[in-house]
Length: 105
Image (cartoon, rainbow, N blue to C red; front, side):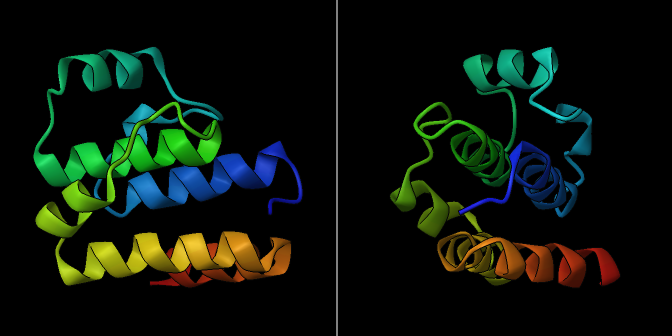
């Protein structure tokens, strides 16, 4: 699990940055993120990432579906999402390492 809300927020921002969606995050989901999510006004892969970030921020709020992720994420995007989920289950140090690895890339 996360050390604190700041780490949770940084993980969400890092995930969204991988697809150029950082405009939807500012310490928490932006109003634009919530509007876009309601309208489903993104590509399928981008929508999965935004839904996943919201689920990570507040479990159940993004309604990300594994089937949609399998259908719409390419290998690199799927790997980033799945490894973040593994890091979350491993704890704060693993999350820090996941963030650092993505920021350095």
